[in-house]
Structure formats: C-alpha cells, structure tokens
Amino acid sequence: MRLLLVEDHVPLADELIAGLGRQGYAVDWLADGRDAVYQGASEPYDLIILDLGLPGKPGLEVLREWRNSGLSIPVLILTARGSWAERIDGLKAGADDYLTKPFHPEELALRIQALLRRAHGLANQPQLEAAGLQLDEGRQCATRDGAEIELTAAEFRLLRYFMLHPGQILSKSHLAEHLYDGETERDSNVLEVHVNRLRGKLGREVIETRRGQGYRFSGVTG
Image (cartoon, rainbow, N blue to C red):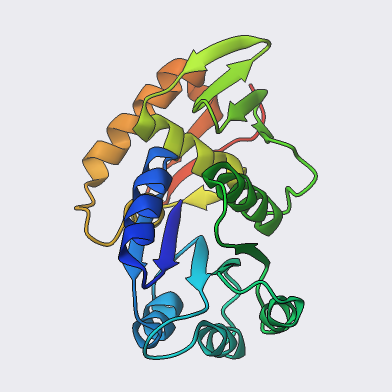
C-alpha cells in the first residue's frame, strides 16, 4: 500500500517513514501544503496522512481542495491541536479520521489498517480474510486452518494488497504503483517472482494470471 505523508516536522516525519516502512507501506513524504495539493491528487495513493500546521498552505485548505476536486482517498489528520472545534473542522472538510499529537505508533498503525479496510468495504473484518487465509498485519504472516504461513516483507506487502482487492484484475503496472514509493525502481519481473513465490506458499489457484491483463486474487480456495 502506498501512502502520502504530509508533515513539516522533519524528526517526526523521519520516525513515521521508518515505522510505516517496517509495517510494509511505501511512503512518499512532502512538507509543504502547496506541493501536497498537486501530488495528492495526481499520484495513486491508498491513504494520506496529513498534518494541519503546514507551510505554504494550511492542511485544512489542502484537504478542502482535494475533496472539492473529487479525491476520495482516505485522509487521516495528524494535529497537535486539541480543541474539539478544530477536530470538527477537519471532519467537516472531509477527513476520515484524526489523531492528536503525541500519539502511540501502534494506534496510528491500527487506525491506518481500519481506514484501508473500510475504504474497501471490509470495515466489519477485524483482520483481512480471503481464500481461507487470515492475514496478521502485526506479525506480517498468514494463517490457514490454524497453520502459520511465513512471508517475506515483499510477499506480505503483495498479499495484503491482493486481499484488499479480492476478485479484481490487477495489472503489473497497477501493483507496482501501489507497492512502491515514487523513488523506487519498479521492475515487473521482480513482481512476477514474488507472485510465483506466493503461489508456492498459498496454492497456484489462489492467484490467477489473466494473459495481457494481470493477476486476479480469487478470494476463494479451489
């Protein structure tokens, strides 16, 4: 999953980028509200983390411009401001959730997971489940019938994306755009290797190849 972090406090941004990276997210970082308006609307992000106190353009104004342009990506607001009025302003502007600084990293991780599940119609699931698999995002492994399936970091990122999009045909370019940040070289051959390794662990029937189109995660076991 590819996230945009808009935060002008560099030490916090560095900490968040490192933490989110360990959780399997690809993160692009911006520190200026003016840049965020354009990039948030032009790149295929799965979720945006937005600070309110930004240089260039305030976070609330950035959020309003995104929503007015039709951007429906989930937005989680980070703010040092504690007043109820400002939180209400953020929700009215189109925020999906907010977190007041300081916050615990685990709470941020759980809120992101919940927002992503909600965005894909899976709000009632406490964890991702499909094709007889349960995905433990904290431990970055899968289980089936009580048996644990170990995953590499790359396999975990790929499986999580598949499980959020069961039954959908996903091209290699689409997957690459959502699994890697804007600075990472995107190699479709590497992606194919990870898909084949997942098939070896989960069963070939779980991930179907559609020639000339991409891959389809079945959502059911064969």
